[in-house]
Image (cartoon, rainbow, N blue to C red; front, side):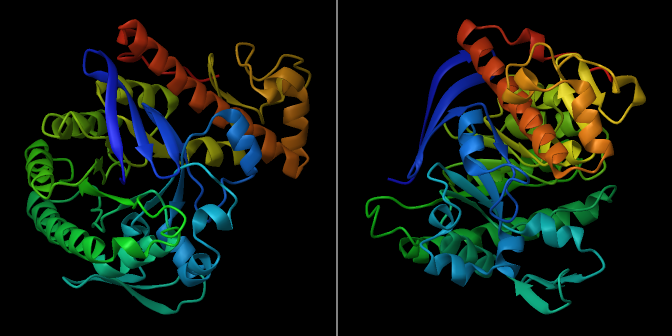
Length: 378
């Protein structure tokens, strides 16, 4: 057994589901905090557990460069290395090498790139990406893909989509031949990782649908929608998700990569997306931006210097239960590391609570409140 998915309730296209993995179950729709280098920035693992994080995301590119996948394999895999017993998903590294536009060269074989750390030269092929992800030992791993820039001509997008499909098959073939080499094979002998395919197609609905159809033909246990949040208008993001969802099977998990603001992830879940991840809650926290039920709150503003209210009066997280806005602002302005910790804990709590609210709405059979509107700024 590698992965199973059951739909337990529906409200229109939205579905309440349960994904079973070798390291535990995930209630969906789910938000996955991003732990790029085996760490969700500023938040220890026990706090993530308290917040209700069911699954976290690790980054293949960064973990390959430091500390190295062989070291992590030798430590028993990523779960043991970072003391996290719940599910983990690793991305393929495709988006990271995409972002190294000045330091990479793409060929049919793969991507030659230079490390952002020391300038050393490396090659990621589909086979190499899967080899690294097997060594890391995440429950869910991703096929190697090419993320295209925005804007781009349809001919460029089609060529990229075709290569991503060829890379998906190579990823699958390598995985099938080596899937029993996972670090925890002896501890969980009946279980293996699961490899998800990735839908590309740029900002062209026709190509998105074609990419989805042909990726589904490769018969992965789950499917991701990639190549979003690369500078396109948010309306286009939603349109591309909708185009792919028309085609993706209803009996398998559907994952949108790298999105978005709280109101956006709620809307995507209401559209029928099961899994999402984003660096926004942690990155915004480090810049003093808090997400609240009243909208986005910039804690740096002078107006909060004597504000004794919690960041969000409706939030039940440990930060809002104990600290006021004036103190949070003071920490941030003073450059105290605790500012990043507290801001991040609150933001992650808000994101995870948002998904809990969506799941509750699906149980009740009405997600209409999540399908329109956006959070105001504060």
